[in-house]
Length: 88
Image (cartoon, one colour):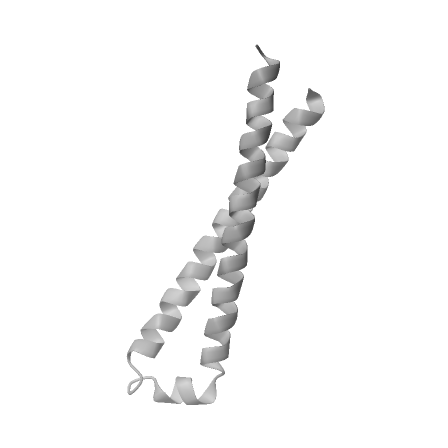
């Protein structure tokens, strides 16, 4: 039972970490969207930087974090289900 509680805490932490990472990545994407939505005003930034590659990398990281978040939530749900069955 102690191990189960540790696993639940661990997965809750992992879910929260994923949520923080997702939030950060979504903010980065929003900033890049702003830059890309005004190509004339941000031409220098767009031409100088590797903006499109960076955008794609962030999108890939976001997708990975969302998959991780979903997996950790599934594990957490299963663990909490086990805990509720043990307390019957």
